[in-house]
Length: 257
Image (cartoon, rainbow, N blue to C red; front, top):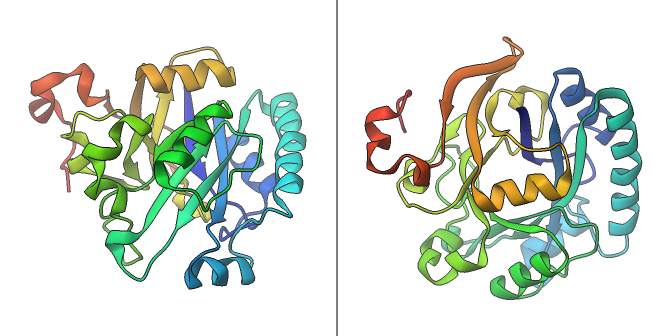
């Protein structure tokens, strides 16, 4: 059993932490795997172009250097901590309207993904390149920030295109996703060190990228709240909804907001 976080950012997009520091932070805490998922914004909208101009997004011309850095850090992470470092992106489609904004995690992808494709085409491209397509924070994050409701509003149409939907972002569990019956994953959406305290995914598989991705597809996972001060997995643990059926609300060990 090991703890994993599949949604983290470095200072190569809008995070505050250099990649090496992010790796050391998780490695020293005993994490078994993390995914680096810096933003890759579409370039058709004003917001997308602004993010690229302000260096809050990766671009086609620097993606390979980003992936090379992840590969280099992956070797170091394994040698020092036996921690797996998984490459990825957060495909970012922002709009002035919350209901037109969508973020998609591409986990386990070591090639450029064109962020200007349609959502079904993006998911197909991610899967064709061996990765998972994850709907990132598809409902309200319970924070004062830009929301991304487009995927959730179209979940019936899009559900077969995604391998999982984020059931937690940082300290918040999303009751809508919990109750949906959709496949789930829990991560921090980490941008700074304080966000280490958050919901995580607990893996019960080999510490191997292919095995991890398959466990998520199969939903052979659990979720746990990690409290940084305790430096340990909290006893507040969950299994995916599909494995607990209708008894889940009664079994839920925490107040759902």
